Length: 121
Image 1 (cartoon, rainbow, N blue to C red):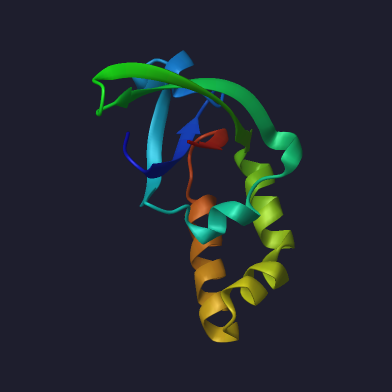
Image 2 (cartoon, one colour; image 1 turned 90 degrees about the vertical axis):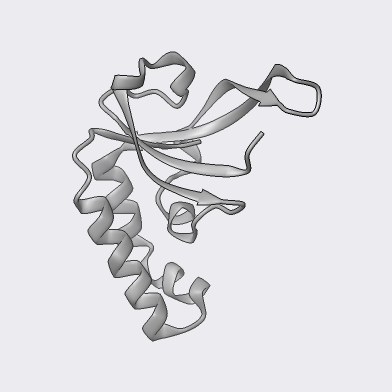
């Protein structure tokens, strides 16, 4: 199982790509061995949906299922959350200039999304 996190855009309110046809979602961004900082500021607890995700266990060469909660929210709400949490975002980064630049980049990226919903995996 790879240690990757994905930001996914879709036209369906769904947190599980296992339930979507491959043409129904687009991977917009990914993090390797990490969850990108901006994603923590995009979603609310109420956005979490229970899903069963399948993954390939390379050690024993079988497909396993894990149950977890994954966020999914309208892109407009994700943007609103990020805008409202600017001060928290900048404080989290720890450097006012760098925090502002990272926040601005995250806002611009979300504003450019053409999908109705965003989710992470």
